[in-house]
Image (tube, rainbow, N blue to C red; front, top):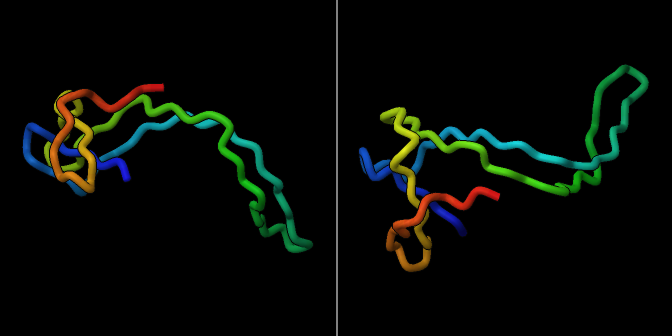
Length: 79
């Protein structure tokens, strides 16, 4: 599991993610107009920005491996 940490304030639990996704899904509308989305497939996903919810900082976010518990000094991978 990929985890994140704000190196500015130490937050590891609250982040705002701006994500662009290309997906394909089956939209099933009921007779009354209610929508049920089925068979959702994410074709492409790009994280545009990650911002710390606590301090608002977006330039000090780092990834770390949850198993090791050690921060990774690299920025979050942007695909």
